[in-house]
Length: 238
Image (cartoon, rainbow, N blue to C red; front, side):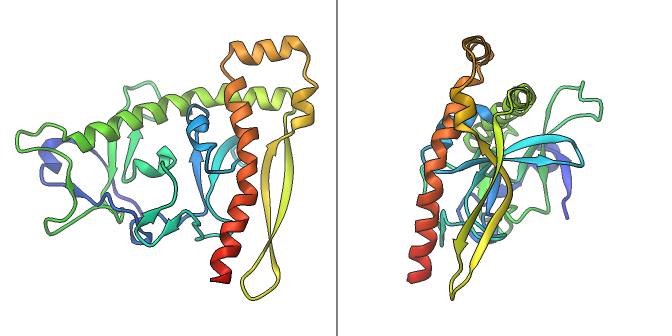
């Protein structure tokens, strides 16, 4: 369940948020939404995969952190084993809200039922005594703006991938602890051969639209699949 409200100092003057890492704060997830303008930052550590939602007829990109629901191989107790989290995870429990027609100015919302909401004096304050955003909230607002910009621009990126048929389904078998294998399915990745075969005009179009860099970052990130599998095997052996 969630309880979204527009964030404001009148109603949330004393609000505090847990900023630590941990499964109890909602970090134990196998994948997280990613947007193209953060692919460069994420590609060092996370495999970036794509998913097609048949009900919505739309693509999304995901930073993979595990191979099964509830598995996050970047989470080690209260440590996060990468320099940065995907923005959609790092900004929680905050989110961007708009009217249904999408025309109104974006507003910062907060989910008051999120496990990061603190009580009893714990956590980091969101507003100071004068009702101004704290440095923590200012940082979150900056990430929200970047995430919102990336989300709004991603439709054109996914349309380009679809137009040039640059995505292909894939499956990966990962050993399970105690024996057997788990098959990761339902995702797509960049087809390197099709990307290499694109005509110069198509490459120029992708570059001019700003799509070429995230394309190559997503392709380069696939080397992290093997690293993630080895991290899982190491934990199982331990």
